[in-house]
Length: 498
Image 1 (tube, one colour):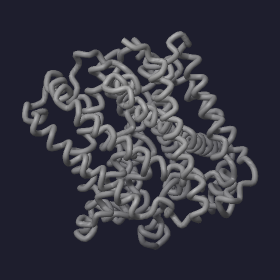
Image 2 (tube, rainbow, N blue to C red):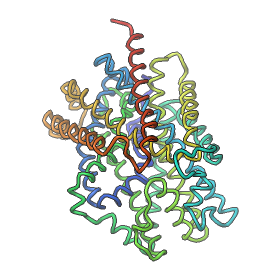
Image 3 (cartoon, helix red, strand yellow):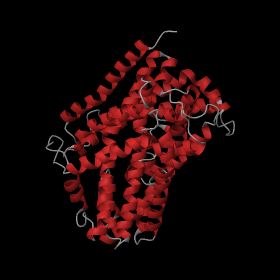
Image 4 (cartoon, rainbow, N blue to C red):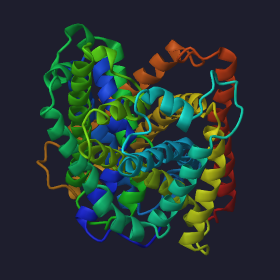
C-alpha cells in the first residue's frame, strides 16, 4: 500500500464523503423516495443505514486500517483464495468507471450549454428538454440493438472529463487530499442554496408533501425495504471495499468508528439536501404547468437532465442560468468525486503488484483503459447499455461482494472487534461484542434476502429489455468473476512462500 496517509482526520473524512456521495444521492435517492411511499422509504433507508451501512463501513475501515494493505493483499493474508473476491471488488469498481464517467461527461456538456445562455440569451433546451437530451446530447436510438454511431458531444466531453479525472487523482492520496476540500464543500453549499431557493417557489409545499407523506402499506412492503437496502449500497458503495483505500492510508492508531459514522451521516445529509432541492423544484414545476407532481417527476438521468433544466428555464434572466451553472457544477463535482474513488481502487491494487512503476503511470494506464472501455456507452444506444450494465453490477456484483465480506468478518470477528474497541471513543455498548454480533446477523440476513429476491424477480428480467439482450450483457458480469479468478490464481502463484 502507498506510504502516504491523509494529512489530517478531516481530510480523510472529506475524502471518504466525496467517495460515497454521488449521482445516487442526487437523482436516485429522491426518485426512490417518490416511488416507494415517501417518508416510509426514508424511515426504511435510515434504519438500514444505521444497522447495515454503518456496520459494514466500520468493519471495512477497521480491517484495512489494521492491515495497512490493499484489498487483495489483506484478504490473501487471511487465506490465499480470498484474494479472488478482492479482485472481484477491484474489477467491479473499474467496470463501474466505464459508464459512470460518461454520465459525468453529460454534466460537463450541460455546464457548457448553461454558460452559453450568457452569450445567446436563451437555453438550448428551452421548449423541449427531453428532446434536447435525447437528440442533441445522446442522439438516442429507439432500442438497444440500434447502435449506429458515436455521439460526438458525449465523446468530446467525456474526454475532457477523463483528463480532469487523471489530474485530480494521479498523485494518489496527495492530490486527492487537496482536491476534496473544494469538491466536497461546494456541492453542499450549492445544494443548500438551491433548496433554500426552492422553498420560496410557489407550489413548493406540494412537492414537499411527497417527501413527508407516510404510506403505511409501502412501509410494510418488502419491495420498499429491498429498495432501501439497494440504495444504501448504491449511495455509499458499502460492500465495494472502497474504504480499503482510505482505511489503509489512515494512521494505525487513529479512531475508527466515530469518523466512519460521520462519513455515513454526512452522506445521508446530501441525500436529504438533494431531496429538498428536487421536490421543491418539482412542486414549482407542477404549479406552473397546472398538473400534479406525479406528472412532472422523472426517474434515472431524466430527473437531472430533463426535469430540472425545465425549471431553470422558468427562473428568469440571469437567475435561471446562474442556478443552472451552479446545479450542473454540483452534479459534476458529486459524480467526479465518486469516479475518483472508483479509479483509485484498481490503481491501488496495481501499485501493490507493480511497486516500481510510478503512481502517475499507474493512474494514466487505468484512465486510458477506462476510457477505451467507456466508448460503447458513447454510441447512440449507450443509454440502454448503461442501464443494463449498471443493473447487473449494482444489483448482483456489489451484493455478492458484501455477502462475501460478511463471511470473512465472521472468521476474524474477534480480532476485528478488539481492534474497533481499542480504536473507538464511542460508548462501550456501541462497540461491544454483543452489538457487533447482532449487527452481523442482521446485515447477513438483509444482504442474503436482497440477493434471493433479485434472483426471484429474474436474472434476465429487467425494465422490459428482451431476454436475448439481457443474456448477452449478463456475460459482462460473469467476465468479471472469471478475470478475478485468473488474477487471484496468478497472484497466489507469484506470492513467495514463507
